[in-house]
Amino acid sequence: MRQLALDLIAEAPASFDNFVAGPNTEAVAALRMVAAGRSPVSRVHLWGEPASGKTHLLRALAGTPLGPASAIDAFSACGEAAARVIAVDDCDRLDDTRQLALFRLFNQRGDPGSAPIVTASRHAPIALTELRPELRTRLGSGLVLALRPLTDQEREQALREAARATGVHAHDDVFHYLLTRKARDLRTLLAFFSALDRYALERQRPLSASLAREFDALIDTPVEPPAAPRPIAGSGEPG
Image (cartoon, rainbow, N blue to C red):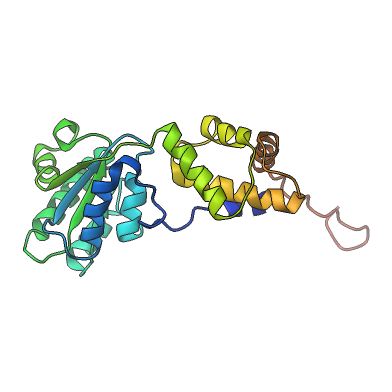
């Protein structure tokens, strides 16, 4: 059951359609233009605090974005391949080698008609003093978009709309539980809510805070490895 619950919480593929823009409608509209190949800019930088949606939008653009854990040759491959959009997440956490790789990528993709490069960090480019100055300049040379996280009221509204869209009846206390006990990013919240709904259907119980706590305890319980079978006397096993 625990593995089933964890599987249910697996995140759905990120897309623009399942991103709740809230105060970021203009930023999302600009990125849709990039995705459609109709943007007048070839460099876009997103910045904002955690849970503001940066990674979701990069995944919607490019599937799996490059980042601090990416192999160096992955940056080179993007420079050589005819990628539609190149996305790089967590630029403020790139080490010196990957900073140089991204800088070279900017130089390789500087021609008109080349694939747009969309990058993201926690702070605006001008404030990324931990980066090489030449890379910081490149990050700020295009369209810079600030993303604001959803307020608690906007996240609750999104959860309630998701419940209404699927015909789920949920007690008010379950929304309070999710907003105060779970991750702040809406994508994870919606995934947990969907998994909780499945669990409630299996148990034939209403969605409530008490059920959410029970579900949380279920998925947080470690799975014990199966015990090794005991040898049977006379089976030839070493004694």
